[in-house]
Image 1 (cartoon, rainbow over the protein chains, first blue to last red):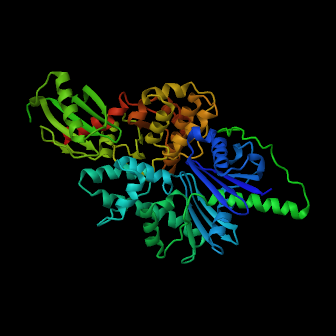
Image 2: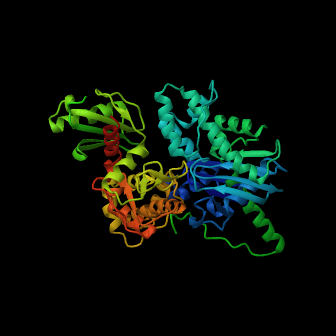
Image 3: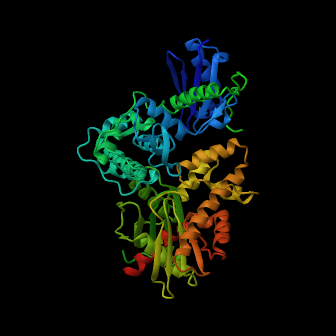
Length: 281
Length: 260
């Protein structure tokens, strides 16, 4: 029987699943939402059914992310910082820093060989997170994708004097009524968030050309460009920037299994029942 | 504009816009509406309705003062007055013993220290961040599904106010959702929000020399829960004006009368 390893990353906004075996990697991404968090078990079930793997054939399960503690079928819970570092290392071997812009937080990780050396996290202020971009898009009446695209066509980016999401949303309305273009507003918004995120990330130490950007923020070209301008060098972005945490979780599941085998220890696992993932324990 | 006997004061705020008609410093009419839509439309509507309430024509208006977020056009000439000066003028007239004005606004908190003559002695303003401001309370009210006007009464029924981990106005939503899901009573969540706002205001007030002669102006001044939590955090009872939400509008009318 093939060994399958499962990584489940329940973020504040998106839920990500990765199943690894010796030949292949399978993935699934859905929106978290209060409802979906309850249904994370269903999401895992669907991915396994799609790839034709029975849950009983899953060797080890690691959960990570904001909702990791509430997964009854996870054999182990590991913080998202550790998982991200591991996932990023697998995609970009030897890389030393990663910035993750999630739905409701933002983190900068300094690493060495996939191990976390240092990290900084902001989950206290919405500025610098995906939520910031959501609020701006809402107040301008466009989608987040459109907001990123618009910013690439700006003539002169507006300058915002502070970074509070609420204040900037208020300011954008004033700019709109005084005739500023959506493009220039969008570019200003991305510059403001890029300034905030880069200032935080630089505190862990960033080396030219050796920084990976992950999370939903990495899917926004406007933000990627604004950050590259700010840092003065290009960022490395995975093909699917949402998956590094779940990938890292699956890889750590595999490593844990291999270590247990080497040491000849029994592998303690939960019963292979896809129990409901509750919001709270 | 000299034959009239009324002074009009208009305050275009971030959350609410207010108007008062004063006759010899006494309020004849007061009205407020949420600041939704253009300030121009809001100003016209408030102005016409206030006059209509009194059955007065434009001729009755001797002085007009406007303060707040926008420039608007009115059918009478008016003086623009800085919001802070409005508050100072009105507080010094209505509550002469007060030396500290605390203003918990929609977007910021401001503390003004006055001297005996009603002149500004010191001033401090919260950082440009909506954490633990009126906006934060609005967001919590929205998530809990309670009208903002009912928020104070509910908070007063709280047993154990929750502690907010982040007072970011945006993350207030997330935190409130989490607390609701944990089964915590909405009264305790709301009271926790008031407590966060009061704590921030008290910390700011204590940065400048604070004495037991404070008033709370703006919409929060008529909110018993806000008053209670702020009094607890400050350690002093507050002096309160009869219509604290209209203080800036009253002051705008007073300053306009004084200067013309």
